[in-house]
Length: 376
Image (cartoon, rainbow, N blue to C red; front, top):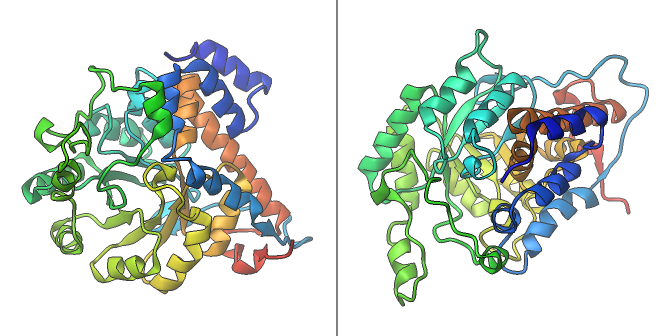
């Protein structure tokens, strides 16, 4: 179920949707209860889910004045790629659950606003078609298109998928490492969510789909974990891949060091949006330790709970090279297809630019740790 695009676009134009929370509220009203529970729910009692957003809000800004006399410059660099701005779209599964065009619409919006996009391995649209929608304009976007992987248990499958992504035009691989088994998502289970038969991860062979650690089998978790990756597998993937490999789901300083030594070209500080292990620290709390651990040897991206332009500037002040948003993309897609996703990105970009101006930052390089304060 998705809203009438004409109604959603009218809402954008009249200003009744003025921030990302408004998009979430409209999506909640529009989607069926079970689909919204799948998208929005977290693990367990959803402590980490709530903390992700709260932690950005609790961090305070310490602005300078009389420094900016023109629009801030948002351009930056990431893995040698020039970015128009440091906001990216995180990999989220099954966009066709909320809009028939699915990831194709998301890619159009990201390309139009020159926003980096990471396509989920569990995309409901073929990776080649998504790449054509993202890269197919007359002028290639000043933003990267990357492909996210889950470890499939067999190196031959991983090699084939990596090569297919490279041939389709993707510029990097992002291996998710924090979800060897699925989290206990009570909200989703209470709502009775199940995947519609016509929406599936079309880029993965059926034999490669991860098995659920459930169903009454006392050894179900053991069977799933037997296919989970190791640090040796990470090093292998980094060695054989013709694309840079980033690791998503790093929150511990020791893992950050292991990731760099295993050949990771970048890290994503992420707790899977609070969907895997409850009572973890918020990503805003984990980010500084990871930044210290890598000692500048690779870029660090962060996701989780970013809903305001002020959140973006705080993440960069902590040392992140870029941020990613996940659920808000699905909210915008629900509400207006490609136009809805573009509206979400535009809102966040405008807020970020305003926050930079009000903090006295003329360019991304001006965003430094001294912009933050611990005063209460």
